[in-house]
Structure formats: C-alpha cells, structure tokens
Length: 109
Image (cartoon, rainbow, N blue to C red):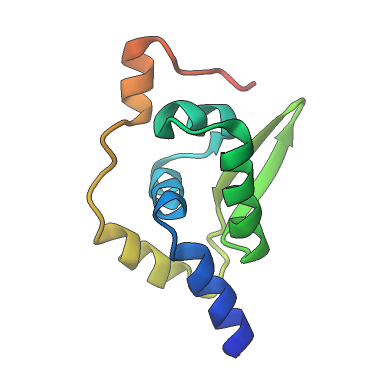
C-alpha cells in the first residue's frame, strides 16, 4: 500500500456514516433500500457513501435484476484490519432483525 492508497482507505473509513455501513456489512450483504431504512438516510446519500467505499475497494456490488447487493470485499489487503477496527465500535441501534420485526425488511430478490 502506498501513501495515496492509504489516504483513500482512511478517508473512506473515516466517516461515521460509512463506518455504520461497513459495520452492517460485517453481518450481512444488503441493498441500498435496506440501508435507507436502517440509517434513516436518502437513497442518493447512501449511494454517495457506497461510491466512496467502492472506490477504496472496500465493498463489492452484485447485480440481481434491478437490485444491487453490497458486501464487504474480503479480498482487500486491509480486510483483517478493517474487521478489527469495526469490532471496536458499538453495534448499531437498528438491525436487519429490527427491520424484520417492524415489517420493513425489503426482499431485494
């Protein structure tokens, strides 16, 4: 990793919203619509965060018909460090299980 790559990596993970996104992705792959419910943010805002995470190669996207499912890039050279850093953070207040209980879990299949 060179200086520019490190800068991109640190900027990508250095935002609280992106940290929450990454924390959610530690548990499960999710689509944008699920993030909007979990984080109470608009789809364009989530998409901008995902764009930065993708540029840093921290996340992967998988197209499923009209949906894009996001997951952590487990092949990223700093993946073990990322997991460790995320493990230091508290669990988010809302979870996918919360969405299911509220009947707001979207099926992006």
